[in-house]
Each structure stands twice: as structure tokens, then as C-alpha cells.
Image (cartoon, rainbow, N blue to C red; front, side, top):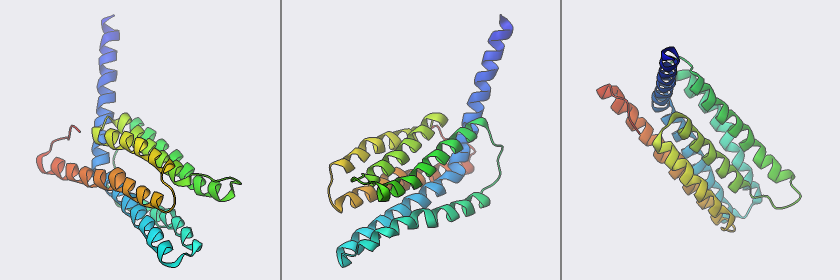
Length: 202
């Protein structure tokens, strides 16, 4: 009986340590990832909004493909620059979450092009990314990501009630709240950790 209790304690300690290591890894590297996708998505959204208003040319909407076309190579470059760490089971879970989200996010615009009926692509894409952020926060127990993720999930439904080009502005604003602000906060937490040798308890 005592051996079972000890094993349970050790298991909890191992899981807690993996979560903490993953959280530290998120702080060290993922702040830049959030900033990459946040700024890229926001800038492309604004380019499309103002470009269409200025020209009225529907071909401007093909610029949405700039997000994966520029984002994926840039992400690979940042990952190669990142300091290598031990990959934990929690790391793998987070990676699998974003692999699924990434694949679905690429399929969404393809589906919107092929769909015979109107398809709320921006809503679905925003919802997917917000779900990914919320799930990541829950897995690694990081309060900032939990709050921003679930707030974004609620915020994404506003895209169903906004019509015309205004939905692009809402989409851009969502990435400021969802990615850019948390990205800067994660980098600030990383600098604090390196300076004082402490782990953030966010």
C-alpha cells in the first residue's frame, strides 16, 4: 500500500516537472512563434481590407495564402534557431494539437473555395486557432494562454454577425489579442526567468 502511494506521488512529480519544462520551453521559444503568426495574420488582413477598398479587385483575396506561404518557412527557421531541449510527452501533445490545427487551417480556405454554398471561412479559421491556444494553455497549465484562448473562442463567434469587409477587421483585431499580446507577454516572462532564474507562475 505504501509502495502504491509512493508511486502515485512520483508520477505526479514527473508530470508536474514535464509541465513545468514545457511551460519554460513555451516561454523561451513560443513568444516569437505567437508574434510571427500574429503580426503576419494581422498585416495580411489589413492589406486585403485596404487593398480591396482601394481597388475593388477580388483577386486581392488570394493574398490570404501569404499567411501559410510566409509563415511556415519562417516558423521552420525559428525552430532551427531555438535551443534544443529534451522533448517530453507534454511537448508531443502540444505539437500534435498544432499539427492538427495547422492542417485544418489550410483546408478551411480550400473548402471555402470549393463549397457550393457560402462558407464562413474566417469564423472557422479563427475558431480553430483559438481552440488550439486554449488547449495548449490547459495542457501546460498556463493561465495567459487559457484566458486568451477561451476569450478568443467567444470573440470568434462575432464573425458570424459581422457582414462585409468589416469581418476582416474583426479577424485582424482577434489576432492582436490572441497572438501578439500573449507573444510579447511570453517573451517578457522569458526575459524575467533568465534574469532572476525563476519560473513564471502564469
